[in-house]
Image 1 (cartoon, rainbow, N blue to C red):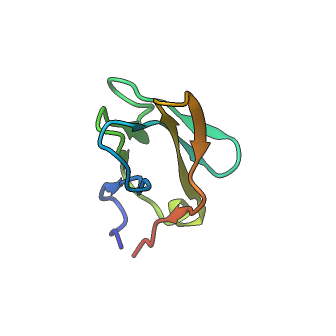
Image 2 (tube, rainbow, N blue to C red):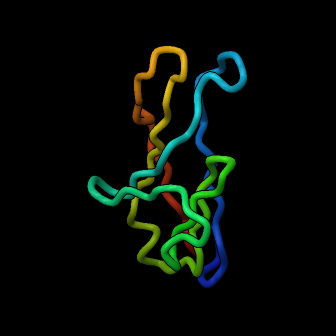
Image 3 (cartoon, rainbow, N blue to C red):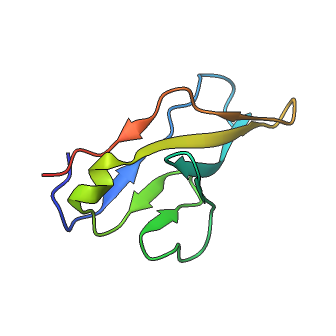
Amino acid sequence: MVMAGNSALLECRLPEVEEGVLVVTSWLRGDNVNILPSLYGDGKHHMLSTGELRVLHVSPADGNARFRCRFLDTLSGISHLSVNSARLTVS
């Protein structure tokens, strides 16, 4: 739960395998907005170098969005999208 106006931090829950094998490469908001790593983000979303997603200035509208992470299996080179999605609960 996050209070409106504050920031939220989402962490991608990856399958447990050897550390460094799975790397978060981006986040997907809804079905069509890709959030890529960047130094400053887009003013609303900022993917950190650790793979976490920071949502800034959360509003009630953010509670309607679903977030999923995309990660790369560095051994196989195959990209995957998380099965489960996260949703912010805004108060």
